[in-house]
Length: 511
Image (cartoon, rainbow, N blue to C red):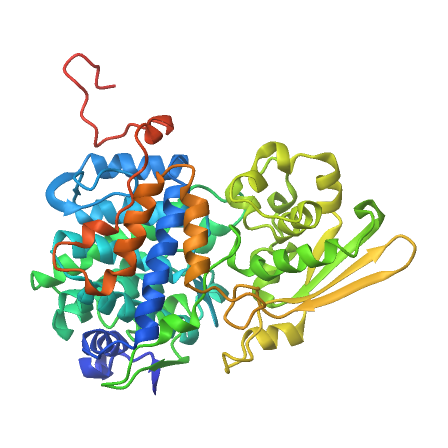
């Protein structure tokens, strides 16, 4: 691996393009290195994981709305849409939006935590959609996905966006562009222009994950995927983009991140070095925000040591700065204690999540968020006894350079009325590679079937799993086999939405 120093340069002192971070990212993407077997196997796992969480959310309003938008942009020879027949094809950019929204809605796919955090599985839908429309083969698809993970993981390690309240989209958007470019075997110059373009248009604030969190949280990665497709298309036509997007004196580092005197360090593979970053990421066992994963596992264990939850007088969760400020009481969002809050907000309330996990001993992607569940008086009472505190040692461990020592949990102290204190620590989620129950292929398949059972027939589940596990060897034009089709009539129950793109019929007013 090679460390690259990234700092701001005045326009008068502009570097050669080959010295710029966007060029180096593009060069890594274009480097045609054979994939290790375990990397290919993990890519298959993530294709299975994405499909399961996507079909489980098919009837949710944001997913239905994005699907309707895609259906207004049908295209012969285009890309598939989760839930719909494989003969229903849309422009790949709109399929990227629809499928990206479906994957993100339940907050139940893979994650990566480092200096910043993201959901790298968000990058897969636009790469698959472009691959379907461009008749790519399975070998090129996995090549693209591996490149996308390499770029997003490197940026997430090296450039922290959250301290400046910038959402994590620029890092995964750069990964999307690099993944598409790698899959299509585009020149470094083309990928470079697309990286500049997509980082420029996806640098947005974290208000999408603050306060009363809206349905945009599910849409945001799909929208980034749509923009990534457009960025690559534009670059392929020979168009140029704002550069240098990172190092420029009006670029994102100078004005949106640490400022003109700062230096970032981004570590990338050297030419010819295998792309293995996907193995540093892991999936979720629970449909909740990434940093809540270990706390759900810990709550399950602790509840067996508590006779009566009503005996609890106070619960203090001591954890990292990120967890405290993003999903803990350190966010200072009153909505995180509101039983009438949106699903998206409850998903980002560690206090709510820990209370329900303690009470129920299970976590369900639908039942754990229902309004009647959140409004139970005993739940509200317990919920409001929970707070988080930032702990310097756990923050240090969160940012540990050695991934084998990095920890994303903390310590909980449960104070009981008779004066006893129940304390326990957890480093990583059970599903983490270093956790108590790391996910393997059988776990991914089991999770897929549990999530798909409500909406997808068993024969279709079998067909998809067979195609997904053969993904690295699929012939060109066979990537549409990676779609999952819902059982007949399933999507009829989804909320019907209308917008600009649907044309009114002749007998329907246009208002």
